[in-house]
Length: 70
Image 1 (cartoon, rainbow, N blue to C red):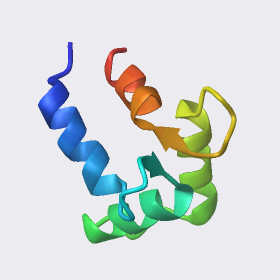
Image 2 (cartoon, rainbow, N blue to C red):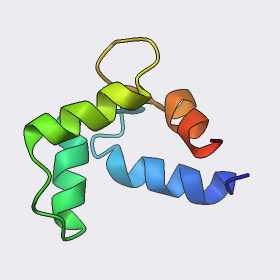
Image 3 (spheres, one colour):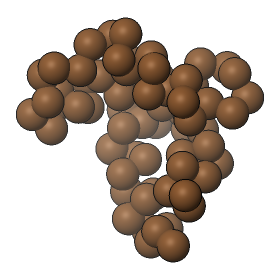
């Protein structure tokens, strides 16, 4: 089981604008800030889609946490 505090910190790092959702653009920019400049917009959209259970194109905290549980 993942550590919820570490997961919250990671979520907050990706949620750049603090709206409680991670967008593909936020994912891409955070990955670049972490040194991975190879994440394309298309790849970022694929990552978001894989965790986006309600189909809104964003990752909420609940969706993010669910990915940490598997």
